[in-house]
Length: 347
Image (cartoon, rainbow, N blue to C red):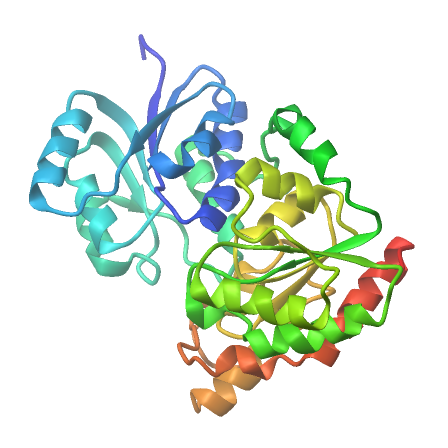
C-alpha cells in the first residue's frame, strides 16, 4: 500500500469493558506502528481512548433516534478504513456499523454477535470460552494476522493529575476499598450484606476501610448500611472521577467489588481483588488471571435460581435474578479479605 493501514475500532461502553479493550488497542499500536488507528468511543470515556499512544479518539454521544444516526453516518462516511473492528454487539451500536466504509469488517463469532451484528461484518473472531479481555485481544490478532498477545499491556495514566487531591485525603494505610455497587442493580451486593461486612471491620481498629462507588440508590444504600455499622469508614461514594478512583485503588491492600470496572482498575494496578460474582462466571469477567480471592456463587445461582446445570450452561450465561447476589455471605467475603491481607503482609 502507498499509505498507512487505516483501522477503526468501535467500542463505546461500558467502562469496565473499555478498560479490558485497551490492551487490544495497545497491541495494534505495537504490532502495526505505522497504522492510523482511530477509536469510536462514548464521549464520557474519551480519555480511555486518548490514553493509548498514537490513537485518535472519535468521541460520540450514543445515538437515540434516527436523526442521531443520520448525523453520525454522515460523519463516519467521510473516511474509508481498511479494517473495522466491531468490538461491541448491541442493537444500537450495530446500526452504527451501517454508516462505516471499510474493506474488512471484523465482528464477534456467531455466539457472541448479538442483535444481528453479523449482518454488518464480513469476518469474525474465533469461537472460544475465554475471558472478555482475551476476546478483545482476538480482534487485534485478526487485524494483524499475528498470534494473540499473551501478556496484556495497559497504557500509562496521569497519576500526577490527582496528586494534590490524593495528598489531601491523608488515608492511613493499610486500608481496604469496598466498592459499593455497579451500574446494573442485579450485580450489586445487597445493603444488608454490606452492613454485615462492616461489623467485621468495626472490630478491627488497625484496618482502615474506604467506600467507593456511584450515586445510584443501591450504592448509596449500601454505603449508608456500611457506615451505620462502621462509622469510621471513609466514604468516597459519588465523590471520585475515574483517575481519583484509580488512585485510591492503587494503594489499597485489597479491593472488594462486585462485577464492575473497579475490579479491572484494581487488577491493572496488581491489587488483590475480592470479587463478588453470582450473576456471571468470574472466568468470563472477573479479575484477569487473578481469581484466587474471588467469592464465586455463580454455580449455586445457576442451580438454585435458574434450575440449570452449572456444568452445561453456555459460557456467557447470566443469572438475571435479583436474589443471585444475596447468595454471597459476609463471612466468606471477610475470609477472602483476611487471606489477601495475610499474603500481602497486611493487617
